[in-house]
Image 1 (cartoon, rainbow, N blue to C red):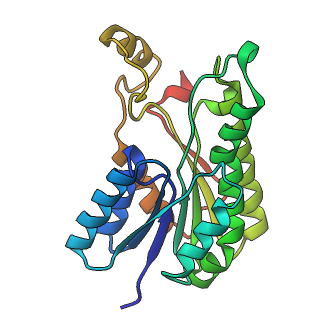
Image 2: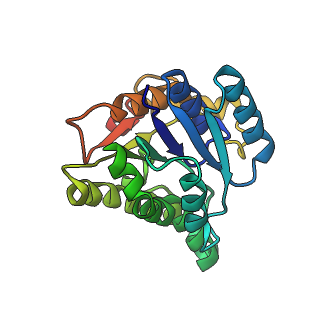
Length: 243
């Protein structure tokens, strides 16, 4: 049986963790990246390898390191020479009010949200071509319309959507490139929101509830085999973008 490989950035927590689990359940061998979450990454690696031997591999990289993409490419090459799916999921997210925004914050947000996805796709292109695979980028449903106090983050995610559409044209017909644009899927880890604040935010969501990581991972699994879909930015936001 031919092995199928997925490489995902930011796979140790939240949406990334669930996506790793879902692809593994579908029979994929999973390679995922983490930055600081070594404990969580190791736990996932051990658990998935207990379910199926030699089916999960973890690689560390800090995308603020200029050599990070090269190191990831070299690590992946030691495991496989083909990738059926590349998912650019890793993301930095924090407010940057304009009066205090810094070039360092801009570099950090761009590196994780746009620069790394672009140059990872470039570095791993031979692997993806070998498998006739696809690329899935993870964006943000609010970014294109702007987010107050998050102009740097919104700019980086908007760049990612432009990259997605451009690469879909450039890499066709051999490689498909799409993006998933989540809305309120999980409450931010660094915000201690009250129930009232949460309800206030949910008033802006047509379905009136927060989503689940599985809402994103199931779409990623679908897109991995949706052979006539490319260049699309698919919103998964409970109707947030239509209110």
